[in-house]
Length: 317
Ligand SMILES: [Ca+2]
Ligand SMILES: [Ca+2]
Image (cartoon, rainbow, N blue to C red; front, side):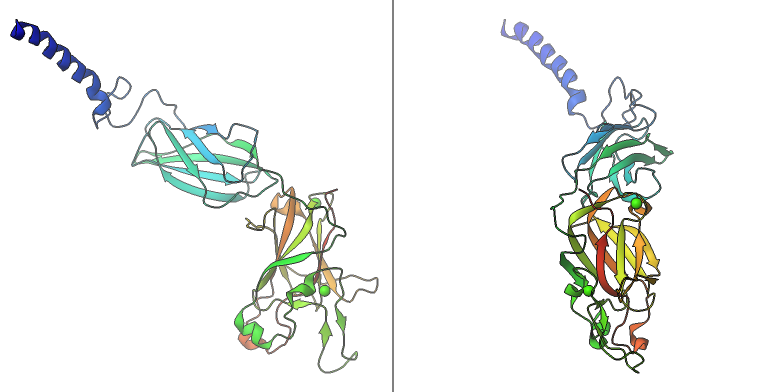
């Protein structure tokens, strides 16, 4: 009796093993993946954007992006490249390739996305059979944290970098000189052989300074930001961000900065439009020397662009 009753038990155990074998097995054979190569015919022909949902307002600037995998690109060795772009798609903000997951693939960028912007994203699956791209999705990042601050000028310096070679010769090294209203001035007599001035920061060869406006400025009509530059029309490169940690987006590359300001202001100026970088609003401004004159040959005590002040033209109320 023991032997006869044991056979059904063995048969039941054997049936059970067959049932769980597909779950434990490494090959992954299933009704939708008959040859076990990871290619699931029930998957869509192109990656499908899952999160963030279309038009989502995000509560974090480091979201997790998820797509449903495309047929033929399910699991390694396929890869998925996640791209975040400006609203128009013209400028890439970040890009990250990751190994394909099973069924779905996720990615989180290692740096925050720019705040206060509507951005687009798309994902391209790549494998031995080629590439296939998802449609384009849209989402909006968290608003910039704007401290309501009196006045349109720079409030504090959060970071400065001037090359050692320039620092050895520069006489205008105080970064706080870029704060407040324009106040650069000539101390030496007009026509004197050597210019002596005050009230500005010489950036040196490719040096930069980052200013917190505390208030925010927005992409309003025309130009949104004015930079006062004390000497000649030395060019300036300008980046902006909604966070001190960036990312900083370019709104002007080596723009000559020499428009006469008038009104008794010593410095010249140049102006920038947030629309250039498709930036809706920002709080932080990074000013970089655009002159690029070789420091070793400069032999001047005011090398690089000479920043006097930063002014918001279109302030956020
Ligand atoms: Ca504008
Ligand atoms: Ca100044």
